[in-house]
Length: 498
Ligand code: GLN
Image (cartoon, rainbow, N blue to C red):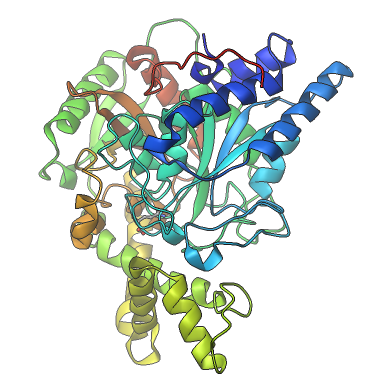
């Protein structure tokens, strides 16, 4: 079996037990990526030299009899909005095209001290705004299952990299669905943790009250392992919460029977009437049936405010926070260096008009308008009030309910180019993901199966705050029946050596 098909724990165990070296793992993954990157374009930066050096260090530690950590030699892809010391970090934008951060994001510090090795920085929608990865200044990423289709977004490069078998896991960020939606489009699992569980220090901010970092994997237990490493309180992030969730393994009984006895799982009443692509509707029906068979008690909850107002309210809040967060890209603090500007105002103008793409500009303008003193009461402040209602509505729904089962998206991935044209349709398709961020909840996007045309289908489990582990427990049981996600490409012959 190629290491590219292996999960996180299998790779780490193989390296620790000297079945193969960290450098061999890295080279094989590099070989796989080089064979497919011309079609997929998952990465903005491939960190071959840095990664190989890190892999060599892991091997040296093993040779000295030291323990390099639970992620010994496991290659990882980070979304390109997570700061990596000395390595270009662009947020998918021209404005940061040459920026190399002077520090590491906390998540990368934690992963590397657990033995992980940096494989590359993933393509993404510019500043994480979008759901196709098509708004990246570096061109679009393709879905490995059908390269004419989008991988989803904004963390499309991270999801595509794991689906294509470049690495067994990746990190993305999720402000309104950007981990869960590309996970489902690319047929891998993706977790948006409870807000505050994973440090945002070193994550280039989009909507600070909504942003959360989380993992993509091809197995639920791998996800728990990654969470055990990155879910740490961080004094450098004032919204980080000291909450000890026990992510230790196993997540359930190892036997094959799917056991959901004692779990109460709800469907959302208001979502029932909404149209879904037939394979997604079918996946919902089959998963409900599977859960019932496994002993779960299925019930219904009502979320009328979510169904009606969440989309408008999210985009008002996200744009308002984005316009504040992006003010620093002015050519002085951060951003392009321009030499032709005749004064400060001209410089700001030039940096922003050349540096930002159309989607980012439109959101900055929207955010500026929505927060202007004369209007903010009517828009921004009103949206934050609705947000409180949404959080309360979820809290009530979760009384006596362990999780909600719902779609991730109403439709399967569209063709590259087409999906970008109708922005409003794109915004509305986020209905199933963004309420979760508004209420700070955890959401697990898990792969259910494939359509007859070979496109992956995923669904979502949403739980109350801090129920991340419980969602993984349910996901683990479901995975027994559904199998774990596969990579999209058959292994490429690899001879080894340089
Ligand atoms: N599609 C949503 C947006 O554009 C969500 C993006 C995200 O989660 N980063 O805002």
